[in-house]
Image (cartoon, rainbow, N blue to C red; front, side):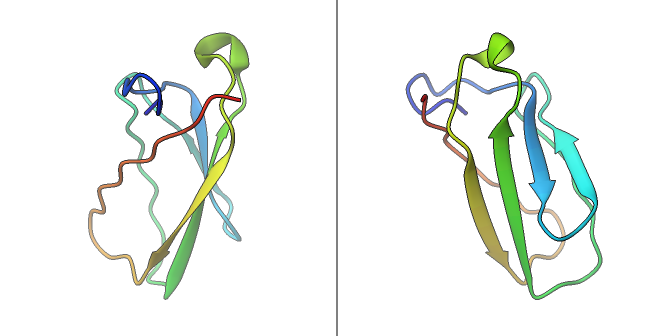
Length: 79
């Protein structure tokens, strides 16, 4: 979501660091990434298409022992 408007951001690149997994957020800001069972997962959120959303700063989030469905609310700041 945009920190300033609270609206979902479509087209944000979401990468599971150290794994070959990348997804892009949908028009509702949702994404799905699957992985093996791991102790820690780092997700990197990047605005790679500034024409669609404007320009947002990248952000990473660390999840410890993620399992099942994990819901996150990530707020990205405009550059």
